[in-house]
Amino acid sequence: MQRLVWQGAALTGRDDMKAYRLLLMAALLLGANVARGEMPLPKFLQQTFASTEPPPQMLWLTPAIKQRAAAILGHDFPGLRTRYWRQGERTAWVLDEIGKEQPITLGVVVEQGQILNIEVLAYRESRGGEIRHGFFRRQFDRATLKPGDRLDRHIDGITGATLSVSAMTRIARLALAFHDEALRPR
Image (cartoon, helix red, strand yellow):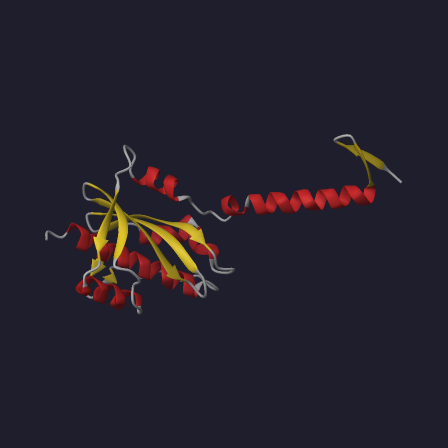
């Protein structure tokens, strides 16, 4: 039987296979977020605000804003306020929406009423992860709201990711509505 030496320990061919499997599993688990195309919040904010990251602000959800959010989402928006970042006319929103069973965390950048960027910050579903890819997310570039809080364009779906596509579309609409509310003179 062939014997291998690994960091001073003698391994048989069978032991070598076990060690290889463990290393492969560890590499897959540790690299999962990178491979999944997710983006950490600090990186998202750094890309959004090239100069200095502005301090977070709060949009207080008045009854009228909550009603508008519920109409967009099809369910109540939780909480009394939501956090966002603003620099000039640019805002960044980090919002969650349920895909099929799990929340999807999205970062949406809005400027002058248009989506500049939408990123998947955390994807927890077992299916539908194709929404992370640039080819899909680019459909939202420069999207705006038209009357009735609808997007000004059709978003093509992805086979097997219908609920994730729907969740991303609702969040895009919500971020545009929240941007409008945050910049509205009070």
